[in-house]
Image (tube, rainbow, N blue to C red):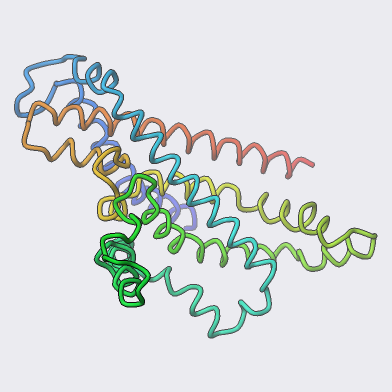
Length: 287
């Protein structure tokens, strides 16, 4: 009976998760090679050549990867500091509610909130003008739709950091990091050595997979960079949607090229990630 329910669950997963993804990917591949499409007339590689030689994809990919890496690095660093420094305080109801509240806010809402706070016509710009810090509101620095993606990074950190705080607190408790720290201290380790050689290695070793997955997730984020990003370069998802939905029908296939390349890169990264995790788990079990 248990095997029967497991097979039914696997079937639903394949039908709901795998089949739609595979169908969409196959359609994108066919469209990128001109096999299907309104104005396409047969198999061709010119769309791939155009998308690759233009360099826009690689610029967008590098831009997206940099934003995702900075956001995840800062989020993980702050979350580790909070989880280790304020372990007891974060278990209190009021403070935990405040910390975890951003998890309930959709990305598009957080993006609009950031825009209203940090744009040249936003709250902090008007406040600075009222306090006499600015002669004109437009002198406020570019924090949204800027080349350094400050608004995007701030919004990502606001949404990602609470998740990692919750994750690290659970790991801290389940792996008994406090007991390990006391043991290390009794053996003569300094507080700095305990942090860098006991607490951080234990917590990061248990969570590195989720850290990488969140990087991949932010790499393909859409709503936040759509609202807070600049016109060029754009993050990958925004670039793909822009290419697919533009009025020039001859350019749509190039958008599908970008989507296919991105899907292949992310899929390979996920396969390598989980295969490495599986090998690590098997090695631990064997030992």
